[in-house]
Length: 154
Image (cartoon, rainbow, N blue to C red):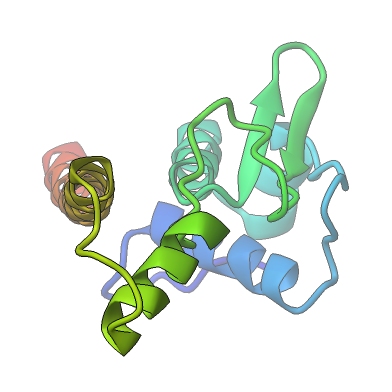
């Protein structure tokens, strides 16, 4: 299975898309080891650098993680094997109860601690969105650099 040569996306993004699809369809399950770089090169008909770029995209998305000298594995969505923070946006039970009581008029206004926690949670959400946008921007720039490198190689 080789990559199409006339596709507008760079080959590394196409390769990442094929692997992403296998993960999403359950063909590659959490904890499964991905084929080696050599196997992916042969299977997809792409260069070693292209394989590494595709794997980097999947690592940035949190779909896979790499273990030095061992390989690349499918991440478990319930844990974070990449070492990055996973943010749980679910409000704690005590906060939900206090908010419900305040809304029903059975309690005083939320404490200053609750307000600070609410602000912190909102800031974390904004930062997560900004990080996701920056990752997408980097991927786009990498694609443009790859296209320019291909033009220079011709």
